Length: 413
Image (tube, rainbow, N blue to C red; front, side, top):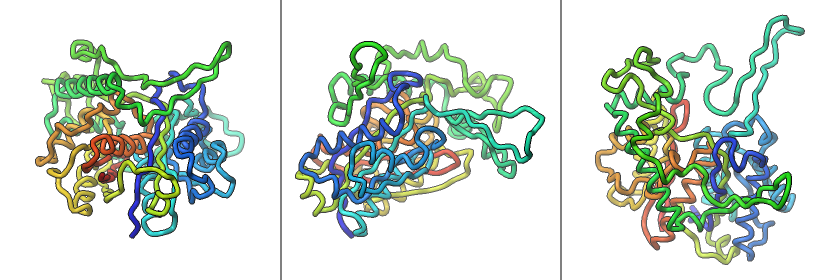
């Protein structure tokens, strides 16, 4: 098997819902990250890229028709460079990285680009076709921004509860209080704000020039959702988003927590963003003229009951560590996507040997944002840059995935 290197990793700043990136098409944003990779590796002949892998979770709007191929063309790659789009929901970007790494490992490619993109702001409403011509009744529009829609009636109803209710079930299972979730969320904002102030995100950021109706373009250069002024007092004022004291779906409300514990403050927001990585084997690395950030060591994938999807990274990480011949004691950083504070705390509770001090040292999705298909690629790139800054070490990027899956990638330097 060939050694696979992460040569470089870039991402756009993450935009808030209907924020700075709202006017940018997802295929254009994906193309922007690919162009940035090429700019940073001027020695690389773009024609040597064997394939472009891009993750996308929705695929219902402007990212249709294979956004991986569209991004490659829009980025100016030769038309001889193919592209593919992969979907593992929230882990689509990490799935793209893993598929690219696998192709290189077995010799099917020497150099590849992998990444992910999602503009949740621009996710369209969809109208299902009627099974009858000229239906007399009303038609229902479905939002494709997030979560279940057009559910198969054969699916177990317990599996199709809202994502936030799944987080409540995890809080129930591990007795995670509202206060613990809010404290974790506050920590995410504080760590992200500190990393931003210290310039730790700069090596991975690819600022986006946003055209304006009037005047010069505006450069979007910093993550939009980080709140340096976040406080427990402000978070405590937010009402639960999925449960009330008198109602609970899929579980019993906890009186001591006022029924619900998951709020907009301790969950990831809706976001826009893109990320891309350049991967290569030994020969490809020479062609780039670059020193790699890290190398791919192992992967892990797992699946559990869909209504406990947030806990799936537990086994995915366990499997990846076994394949890598490593233990939690060998880790220097673990980036676990913060879909919900309850979900992260639930995973940590099931890793008794894990040191939470190395968890998301630069903050996570609660502060930075979670642009679905881009998040996995963002996490892999963030781990690679942290290892490169240290000059050594082992790190993991992992995500929970709706409908009950987990994915993990081990990187080393």
